[in-house]
Image 1: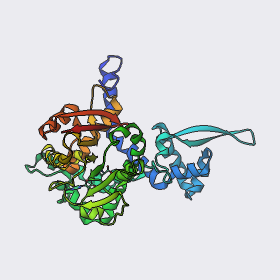
Image 2 (image 1 turned 30 degrees about the vertical axis):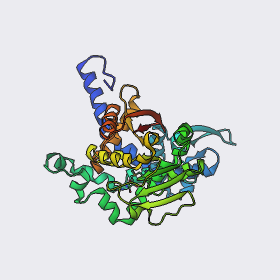
Image 3 (image 1 turned 120 degrees about the horizontal axis):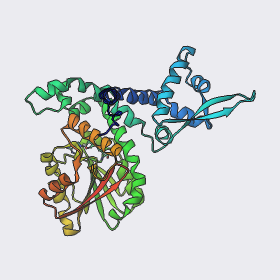
Image 4 (image 1 turned 60 degrees about the horizontal axis):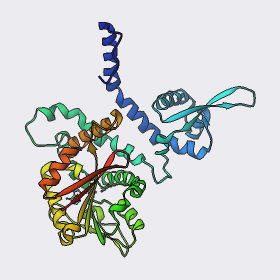
Length: 361
Ligand SMILES: C[S@@+](CC[C@H](N)C(=O)[O-])C[C@H]1O[C@@H](n2cnc3c(N)ncnc32)[C@H](O)[C@@H]1O
């Protein structure tokens, strides 16, 4: 059981069950408190302060009305409990002590001046356009249409919504770019995958954050970012980095290798199969030497701990409800890869919760 049962008495079990249930009912409070912290820029303030910050110093930096100092304290208390701040004691000149707050590794990921800043993920994932649809889930379950939850709630697909709302498209691309910056660390783990390649096409490569990192590490590798025409319209590259607009369901530019990062989880098996078959076609000029490099989640409940599995399963529902996509278990990856006509593959965990899946013709 995921929760500890009581002392065996009926009441004890009931109380524990209630705590478990309420905890999950109010999980959104932790998410929204985190969003408030990101919007207020608290991580930046503490980072720029350069030393532990007291409540009154933080309130003053935030220019809060005095009536909000107690509010700030209670937000900080929850966020500290949730691991986003740590408390330390400052010795004052009058001999007294005062509590001060410092950043922890998760809140350091919200410092906007750092390349590893994940604030755009918090902004995008907790934006009303991602959350409001959940109120329509009962209708979605009971209707007999092949819509995503997002379509049922809003009447348009998420992709159409993005394409019709330039600000939202920018927010989405910024969230993707933020996540991709983490790839710089992962590149050290998977350098071997890109060595000895002459050309690479990054399919669904967005604004090219990942491809630029690969291009920096392998300046002689000819890289192409391939995405929808409106996504790459204003992107510029260099001698060995170009942007091409198109539709991966029609055809993909030829290369020695294709990269699909954070792409296949947007699509169901039928459409993913189509993309993979087009990837196979794109690398066919390289014979058995070609490869497809997938970076996505692989659900592995047996090996992963509870927190990691929960994150992967949360992502699965996000993909399902917004795109009719899915996060796949290892055996589902195998089925998809073999059905697309590839002969072998290798899965290696990277980037903390994603996997590198090397696929060979
Ligand atoms: C989840 S994002 C991943 C972006 C990037 N690979 C990354 O990891 O940051 C999926 C990308 O697929 C692109 N995409 C969606 N439909 C496409 C299509 N039919 N052809 C090419 N790209 C497409 C989207 O524009 C988006 O940039």
